[in-house]
Length: 113
Length: 110
Image (spheres, rainbow over the protein chains, first blue to last red):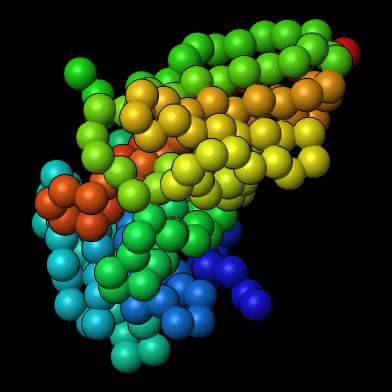
C-alpha cells in the first residue's frame, strides 16, 4: 500500500511568490494535517482538513491556506512568500477519529530566496 | 513548559555504543510516534506505540503510560544512525492533532 505522498520534494521560490504543496493521504484516511518545521525549530501544527473542511488551524497568518479535494488529497498554499517561510512542510493523514494512528509523508522542503 | 520534552537535545557517541533517547510528555495521549530525520532529508516514521515495547532491527521503543515517558534505544549504533530523532504524541483532549518534541540530534562517530 502506498504511504502518504508529498510533492514536490524540494521547491525553490522567490520572495513574494506563491507556493503550492501537495499531499495524498493513504487509502481510507479522510484527515490530512500540515506541519511546518522552520530552521532550528520543532514541527508546528499548521492545518487540519477532514471531509473537505478545515477543522483546525495553528497560529499562522492567513497567507497560509489550503484545501482538501473530494479524493481527500490536499494542497497547502503559501502566498506572498517571506524568507522565514523557508522550512520543511510535513503532511500526515489519519482516520477522522483516530486513536493516534497517523501516517507521515516525507515532507516538502521549501526554500524562499 | 512544552507539552513534549526530549532529552538529550544533542548526543554524540562512538560506533557500537548503546543509545537511549528519552521523551516525556504532560498531556493525555492515545499514542506516541518516533520519527527519524536525516540531515537535509525528509521524515521517516519509526514506531507508533500506545503501550509496552516494539522492536525493529536494532531499534527498540518503549512507553510507560503511567509515567508519561517513552524511550528510543539503538543497539550497536552505526554512523548511518546519525540523524535527528523526533518524538510526537497524539493528544486526546481538544482538537485532534500531534504535538512534537524538539528532536534529539544524534551523531555516531566511526
